[in-house]
Image 1 (cartoon, helix red, strand yellow):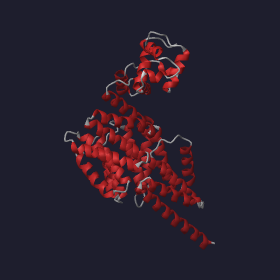
Image 2: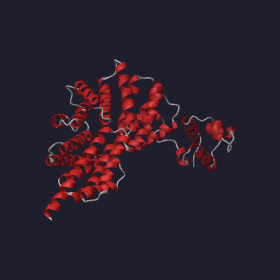
Image 3: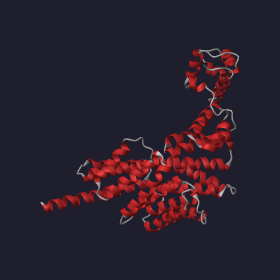
Image 4: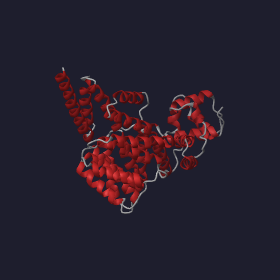
Length: 412
């Protein structure tokens, strides 16, 4: 049973976190005086009162228990130092209760919670925290916090395929950074990383290339995670421009110099990105892609998240298709279809592209219509680069399909 005075303290925190007065929370089903006595600890709550208040607050009765970590400051310290799921859950509960804490403290809590969602591949959940974090950054008024929040928000929106809004957030962060001479180099690099990515997705390649060159110059002489991600981002722009040789050189430099001990997740993603590059270049190099897959799989046991596992499985499916192992590709796609998707918008679209390519390969005309629909969807989402890629794949698939029919007819 919930005991006083802990229940009263918790109730007051939950009410204040939602910006409710005692009158607003009490409503028609409870007197304000009774609610006041509950919050002060003068009255023991009944089950009926707890159920009523839980309903008014949109909670469960168990949510009135004090978080294990106590205050938000305590919970934040635990989450930052351990990073465990338990500590993160304690932080989430404390954040919901501690509406009166300082904005900067709440900003730090939101940042950690958003990061945890991102690592899991839950970009929708990440977005919810980041939207509040951006609003809080505007309230605090510190340029560094505003820039960091907008930068991470832009990257999250890009992962969700919302390119127009992502570009607006990244552009705003870039403008704020230019106006503040005291902004740290890492923050400037993070802004450029986000800006380059969304500009490339939006098909604004001259802007993306210019900002990518600026980014590479900014991180020159380093070999840390920021530098490695900059090399990866610059390589992605070069791939879109068809300069596969320079893109490969950028990624190989990152693979050679970046230490997996600093960030094993990034180390894994660099290998996945390099493997995909080997499939995209002309001519493709499936053997090199296979080596990247093998390296990534060997480390997946130590830093595997659902999103990373799905990303690697998708790469293996593309590799199977390229090497004419169509049944293997279908099997891998089937595995991914059974899992809760923890992938970016672009990666999910890649899976749909491959499914339609397999349909076309088997003579199913619906595959052609499916690719057309995907291209039109990408255009509607302002993802111009992806749309162009899908139209190219459709043209190549049709040409290959026509060639196959011609060969079959001549053989007959």
